[in-house]
Amino acid sequence: MIAKRARTWLRGGSLMILLLGASLFRAQAQTVQFSLPSFAYDVIYLTDYVDVTTQTLKSSIPDFSGTLQTTASSLSIYLVADAYVTLRGGSKQQVAQVVTRPFTLNGVLTISSGDLARGSTGAIQVSAYTEGPGKQILLDAVTNSGQPTAPVGTYEIDLYAYAGSLFPSAQPAARPLGQFTKIINVRASNTNEFAVTLIDPQPGASVPTTLPTFTWSSSNPTNTIFVYENLPIYHSPQEAITGVAYLKTDVGGGVSTLTYPANAPRRLQQGKSYYWFVQTDVQTNRGTETRQSEIRLFRVQLSDPLSNNVDRLLNNLGSGIAGTYGTLLSLGWTPARVTLDGKTLSLDDLNALLSTLNEQKIKDFHVE
Image (cartoon, rainbow, N blue to C red):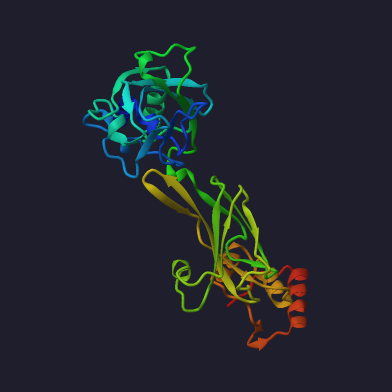
């Protein structure tokens, strides 16, 4: 089915014309202007543009509408479109060339996807469609990937408007009435490629500052970081992030680190725990899809000798106790006091106990 869809799309030919960004298509004397909506997509689902049953461009594509305009009162023209592809690691190859029949442009002409599909009976009709070696390269890439989406690469469309009198072909030396080149960069063949991975703080970490620095990795240059307080009423991280965010900040320009702003409306507080995560938006022709990282907990723990000594004690008692202690920390628990045989130990008593255990290498005792 993937191979069939790939062949279907490639036979559509005129699809490349539809991927033009909103722009002007004009000659030096601004004889012709051509505009189509902007298509700034990270991922493109090819089957949304091609009718599998008829093997032609779909006559109805959401949000597609464009115009052709001339400064003259009436002008006979035809269009030539050359499509090229440069897949990642490959060289530039021509996919196809589309030539329309001459048509009369009276001022402004509104066009839709149906006007550019082969077999159209509207004002604009496709006269000839020829394939280049890039067609098979694309077909192989789609078939091998198993994805009904455009492979990662650079797609180029060169458009020319020629006087109708030059039809059926324009000589290389002929001056077009208008021309335009559009470069489209497809950055992924699947939205799942836009993963966000948290780096620091680690899960359950104690940070010794109310202005911690967050770092993550993402294949998208723009991301949004969220921070929420972990309140006692919440029973899960998912529930906690339904509250009011302490921080919600967009980070762009490929930057993947942020220090909690000192001028943030809500400040982090000593002894409290918080959840943080990062999400990114992936633009596709089917709309925006959000990808979110895991949700991590951290606590703000400024210099606290008691907690530091408990950390030293329990983290040296083997993986079982250390693992349980780490789980407690990840839930936001912090040690408030230490008792030995029912007696509360002072900080000096705890230090002395740690020294004794260390000197005598005692690890065989019970911790509750």
